Amino acid sequence: MSEASIEQLVQDWLRLDRDPASRKLVEDLWRAGDSKTLERYMRPRLEFGTAGLRGPMRAGWAGLNDLMVVQTCQGMGRYAANVIDNALTRGVVIGHDHRHNSRRWAEMAAESFSKQGYQVFLLRGLSFTPLVPFGVTHLRAAIGCMITASHNPGEDNGIKLYWENAVQIISPHDEGIAAAILQSLEPASWELLPTTPLVDHTSRVHDAYFTGVLPELMRPLGTSRTPLRIVHTSLHGVAEPFMRRAFALLGDSVEVFSVPQQSKPDPDFPTTPFPNPEEKGTLDLAMSYADQLGVSCVYANDPDADRFSVAEKVGSEWKILTGNEVGVLLAATILHWHKEERRDISKVYMITTVVSSKMLQFMAEEEGFSYAECLTGFKNIGNLAGELEQAGHTVLFSYEEALGYAVSTHIKDKDGISTALVFAQLMLKAQQGLSLRAQLDALYAKYGYFVSSNGSVRCESASIQHIFAQLRYSGPEEQAIVYNNQALRYPQQLAGLAVTRIIDRTLGYDSTQATAASQMGNQAGQMVQFYASTGHFQIFLTIRASGTEPKVKYYLEGKSAVENKNDLDALVKSVANEIVSKWLLVV
Image (cartoon, rainbow, N blue to C red; front, side, top):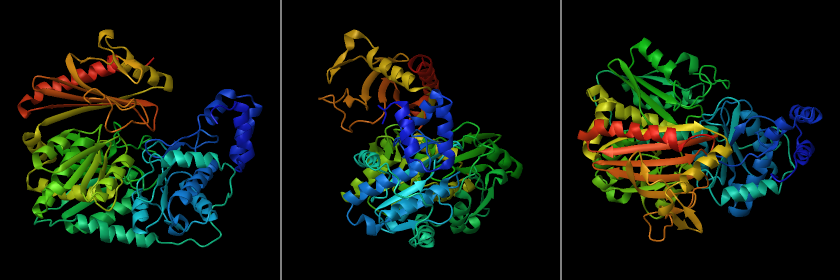
C-alpha cells in the first residue's frame, strides 16, 4: 500500500471504513485538499513493532481505528487457523485496559474472531496485560489479543497479539499475519459483540492467577515487628485492584497507600501525560505523597501493569532505581530462594536482553547458573525461555532494563503485579536495617561495580538513517571492513577508549567471530553495539532505533572493581557526553 497514490489510499479508506465520524473526517480533508494531513493519516500503514501494533487513535492507515482493529483481527484469525492445530476450538483470549476505545475494540475483536468460528474468551472488565498470556496458557487457547498502548500517551492505543506459546508474536508469524491482513481488507463484521454467546472464564483466569501463580512466589515472611509501608501508584491505569489482591497474600507484613490522584483508571492521564515510569518526573507525585505520610518506599506500575518501578528514600533524598538495579536485586533474591531449597542451580537459566546490564552474566559465571541473552523486546525473551524449557531447562528469572520482569515460570511475559509481590518480600530485609542501596552495594562487592547511563534523542526517520550511516561509514578508511559487499568503517575509539568489539545487529556483523557473522542473527530495526576497555574499566554501549517511538536510544554501561567506583562514574559520564554531542547529532 505504501506505493499507492494518496488519492488511491483515501479512496480505499472511504470504501472500507464504516465509521461515520472517521469517514466524514477523511472526506472533509480530501475536499479541502489538505494533502499534508492526509499523508500523515494514510501512510505508512501501522506495522508491528517491538510490542505489537501501537499508534495514535485516528482515521487512516497510519492510525489505530475501528477498521484497522477489524482488519488486524481478521488477519490474525485467518493466519492462526491455517498454522495452529485446532485453533478455532481452542479459541482466543481477549482483554482490554481502560484507554479510550479499548473496550469497544475488544468487543469488536470478539465479534471478528467469533465470525471466523473461534471460541472467544473475553475477559470482562479491565485487565492488566499479563492476564491475557496467562489466560492463553491456563485455558490452552490458540491465541491472545490485548487492547492496550501500555505506557504511551493518552492519544495512543494498540493491540498486542499472543501466539499459542503465550508469548507476543515474532517472525515469521508477524510477517504471516501482516500478509493475511492485506489479503483480507474487506471487513466481514462491524459489530461490538458476537450474536453467539461468549465463554466467560474471567473469574477462572483471575482465580488461577491469584490463588495459583502468586502463592508459589511466597516465602516465609519472618517475624517483622512493623509492616513495610509502601506508597503505590497505578499512574491512572488498571493496577490498583490487582495490586491490592496480590498484597493481601502478605497479610499484615505490608501496608499500602495509594496515590489518591492516580489510583483510579483515567484514559486522559491528567497528572502524567507520559505515563511511563522511566520518564523523568513521572513518580514525583507519588514521592511527594510518600513524604506527607512519612513513607520511604514508592512502587509504580505503568497503566497496563506489565512494568514495575521502585523508588527508595534514604536520608533526605529519593532514589529511583534503574531497571537494571531492580533486575539484579530480583535475580539475587530468586537465586537465594532457589539455593535455600537446595535445588541444583546448574540446571537453571536466567535471561536478559543485549541492551540490559552485563551484571547478570557476571553473576551467572560466579554462581554457576546458565545465562542467555537475546534481542530487545520481551517477545524475544519469552520465546527464548520457551525454547530452553522445551530443551529441559528451567528459566528461573528474566528481565529487560525497560522495567520488565518475569518472576514466575507460569508467565513468559513481563508482569508488574507478580514482580511487586516478590520485590515486597525482598524489601522486608530493609526492615532489618538493610536498604536497597545496601543490598546493591553487597552485590557490587561480590560481582563487580556496574553503572549505567541510558538516554535517547527524538528524531524523524531521515535523521535516524543518517545517525546509523555515520556509525557505519565514517570511521578511518584504513580500517574499513568488507562484509557482505559493504565497506564498513565503524568508530575505533570511544571517548579515548579503544573499541575492542563491534556487533551490528542489523547487518548481522560481529568483529569477534571468524566469519564475522553474529550468532544471534539480525535485529529487525537499527542496532549497533560497541565494547571498549582501558586499564581496569570495561564499557558496553548499544545504540538502537526505538521500535515504538521516533527515537534513537543509547544504553551505556561501565564495569570496574568497587574500589574504582568514582573513576568509573566519571568515565561513564564522559562517554555519555561524547555519545550525545558527537554520535547522535540530529540533522
